[in-house]
Image: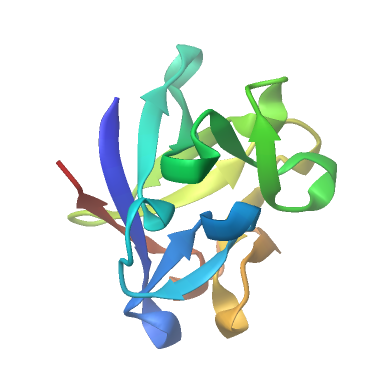
Length: 129
């Protein structure tokens, strides 16, 4: 596992994927462990994003076509395909019923986007050792 932070690119550059306060949202800068995840490697080239801090043990989930925090891995709703783009830029594609959708930060909101559209689905992966 590696500790990472995910910075939004494009119009939201400087904001980070956050799991603070039990919610999923964009946070200005890294304020603490609420913006840091363990990137867990799963079978078949899949990954999971594991929360740290107050939400330790919860996973970023895309189940039921929404983003939320799930206690543990219940299935494909907590697994992602991490697409390496350029340098440290990555995109996260859903599996299961949301297959083909991507973790998006477009329009200053965290959501699932149908397909990869561009920078709104692109994240800069930053090592947080």
